[in-house]
Image (tube, rainbow, N blue to C red; front, side):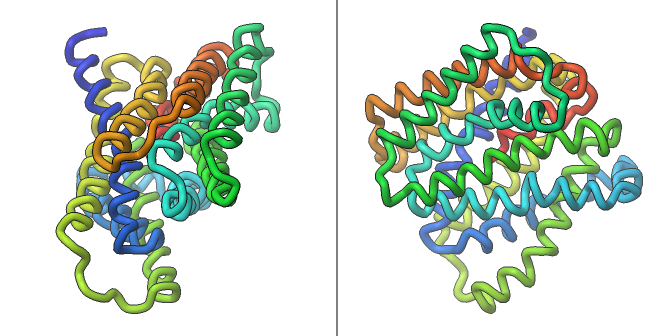
Length: 304
């Protein structure tokens, strides 16, 4: 890996590992739906002009049905469920549970008949990942928070389903056009949702929350996808998926340092098992060809 690729890898691991912390802070004063609206709206304002200038929007709109489906399963539904879950779960635990996305991706591949025959290493990875999730849920999460764990489960399934859409119906379309359009559609949908659920916006949140929202939208969403495109250009889409294994570590450290979240033995055990299992499954058990055909699908699920 070149020095530039290593720098891009570390930068992307950081900006896709800290959203859990920023979401936790932002939800102190705004609702999950308001956060989704603000994050997608600002990110769309950043990415859409770039996509339009590159002529990347028109071809995407020709597949508007699949675009709507992608925006729903990858952004609109997962992000609000993620916010709801973080009102009850530590940000570090949420980040670790989301790291199970490759395991859900394997299940989707099986369900759609696209999974390759699993090697012993992949079966070992699947087992380790499931045990790791069980350790986090059964030993590191209180019974009252199991509903939040189920909400994270929705996030995981959505993040795993998104690339499946990218790798076939949206295959070959410009990645920045897909993301800019999906973010714009989500923001427009959430305007009436927020008005119906939260009413007319009240006073402006505190500076701390405003900065968190701006960072989520500009750095962890808009800039992160630009970093992803650059990283894929350096190392290819398959090697770029390894970013999945850095993000949870960043989430755990950020939660402990900035929010004082407790890192238990089971947190560490769950982290090691989930990340190791996801690595083995992603390396051996998932079909490589579809992942190589789209520059966004390689790493989109890691974006919190």
